[in-house]
Image 1 (tube, rainbow, N blue to C red):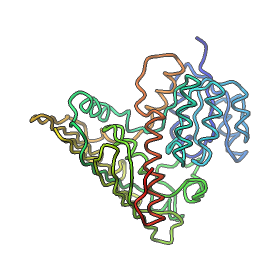
Image 2: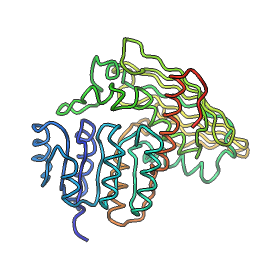
Image 3: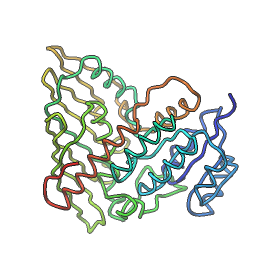
Length: 349
């Protein structure tokens, strides 16, 4: 087959720091079109990667004819951009959260199915060997019917979400535009949208759970325009309950890794996944199993989702560890949490 024609809609900070370099590792791709706001940086990206088309209008990227589209625009535009790319015949890797509203997320799932294209969400952790091994344990041995789950995450977003500084991993050449994180009309909210989406994408993937209802409290110290901290109680479809917490840590608090921990108890066992301490433990049917892991096994990267969407374009057999369906379940969990925090009541999807 010929070269895989790649387009990028929304070449922001993370796309510059991660997605574009990871795409460039594949020697059988061709950089066809790129779109973002700001002509100076747009031209710089075009020159660096050899894009044929560079435009502030995303439709120009699609009209150039592409096999793969990476969507890294602000969350409020994900539905429009990803749907247009799917309907143009491209496989799509979309940044998280896949949309702000669950109806839009499920619409992307049905569009991908209708077009017979892959929709991959940028949940990078789900592709790390540590996590694929944990998922294999859950699939092979499991913990029975889920009864209780706790999820905790903290990461270096305090300065970013309070408009007092940048995310420490941001590309020096393309610092994130602050309002894409702190304008609710663009981001949908604060820490839950920016970071807890990753933890939920991991926890719901490991357990197969789907959120039914939520009661949430969120706080915005430092006069932040969006919430920095989240405390959410969930009930899942099968009657299980759980607690999810997220906190905006200080820059340098976690250095090269995030604090993410998932614990789940079922009727035949329980599981622990701790990314900060690189630990995976499963107890099932009276037997314990601990994975032997290196200290950096849980360090985040987003190589896997890029590799997955390129495999889809090649027609290779691959496992989509972050499918659109998972992204939609994650958006459901986020949407009802924000509804609850605003209403002060238990909310259901």
